[in-house]
Amino acid sequence: MCLIVFAWRPGHPQPLIVAANRDEFYARPAQPLSHWADAPGVYAGRDLEAGGTWLGVGPDGRFAALTNIRDPDQPLGQRSRGELVSGFLTGTQPIEAYLDQVASRAAQYSGFNLLLGDGQQLAYLSAREATPRLLDTGVYGLSNAGLDTPWPKLLKARAALQAQLHEPQPEALLTLLADGRQATDGKLPETGVGLTTERLLSSVFIASQSYGTRASTVLLVSADGSRQLVERSFGPFGGHLGEVALHL
Image 1 (cartoon, rainbow, N blue to C red):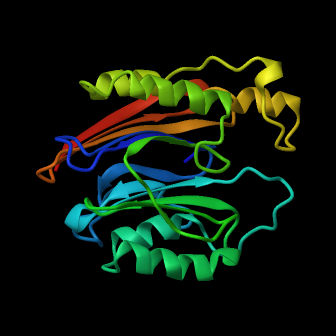
Image 2 (cartoon, rainbow, N blue to C red):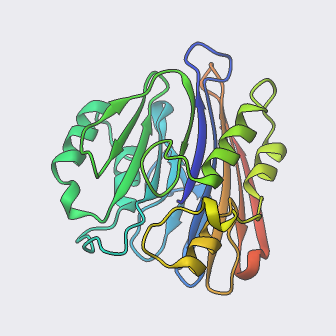
């Protein structure tokens, strides 16, 4: 997952709103959003190479999502980052205990950002800081750096989410995730991947022959615990592959 914008509003009729794009090589096999037969109450896509996931919901109001940290010089982790999401969704540990455990073994993974929620709290952990943080009410953005690092696509998507908070609708949120406009060179971050790649990765929605946005996901959580999930899947050059909509 490479871009997540979200609103956390405890006490509001819709306390959690999430709009997220998962960017990955098209050749990496994955299963679209569905119920996991081996994990009752878990609904998520699934990485069929390592078995984990990038975003999903679970029993008792659980929510988890992940982005990678972009750094070509970082060591390759021994374990798959996707297990950090699936481990929380399929487990029973409280958020803070789970994040403390993850922080203690963060070096086993390539760089990551992890979001966890349980309906009462929303928390964030960056592998670069290894200090869990409970989030206050607000609208946030997370890409492939720290929380709210002001990359152009994050600022654009976060502002678009902010503008929809009065009446968020899945279709409008999916539209903000479909923005393929690249940033101008003067606004690009320098993450060590070269100018051509920085340009490609600068748009909210990424499309190319071999790498791009594989899934756009919207999650709307209501105060009564009901959840609406919509996911669109894509292939090379942004070709639309399908859509899944769930009301839980």
